[in-house]
Amino acid sequence: MTNNAQIRQYMLRLAYFVLPVTLAACKNDPKEINALVGKQSLQEDKAEEVTIIYSEHGNSRIRMFATEFVRNEIAKPPYVDMRKGLKVEFFDDSMRVESTLTAMYARWYEGKGNVLIRDSVVVVNKKGETLRTEELIWNQNVRKFYTEKFVRINTPDQVMYGDGLEANEDFSWYRIKNPKGTVRVNKEEMPE
Image (cartoon, rainbow, N blue to C red; front, top):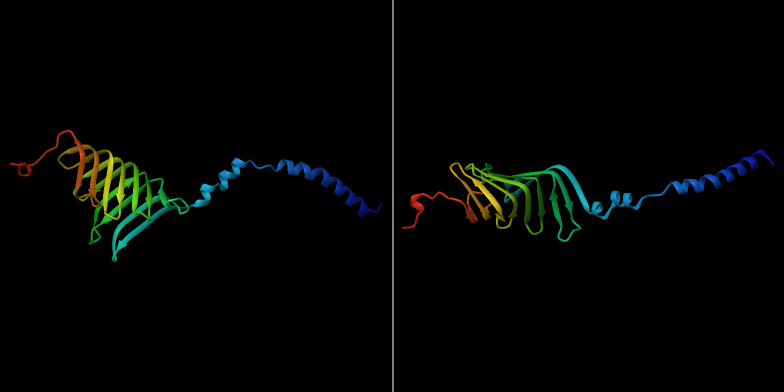
């Protein structure tokens, strides 16, 4: 046998031994693969530290900051999750902040104009009144907030509680649906 033939035969024997061992060692755990390229991750577009400015007729109306912004356009209906906190500023026509909203989580259904806001929801208006609740629905089309959950509103001179609320977008007007506790009323507002 020539030297080249011996080397070739040696390489062939080595391949017969190494190839099965290598193939046996290259097993992939299906759970690990799904975690890396699962259906959910293929549907989502993620971004961090996102700022969105919404304007109407050339006037900025809303500025939204989201720590983590995750869009899922394949879902029925499509949505955007803001999972790690958000802040929304609502502007008047002169670009002054009328109210702010903060929360830990929100899901925005762009096509329907609804935003489900949850976890440590706080809305503050320009009068210094503060709404606190655990869940709020914001309908962008009618520019109102709604909830059926417990609410607490602090004003400069009183604290109000209740279950359920309806309010306009700048939180300058609101109505507690099922008020609880004592509510102060001015004499001028009392019926005769």
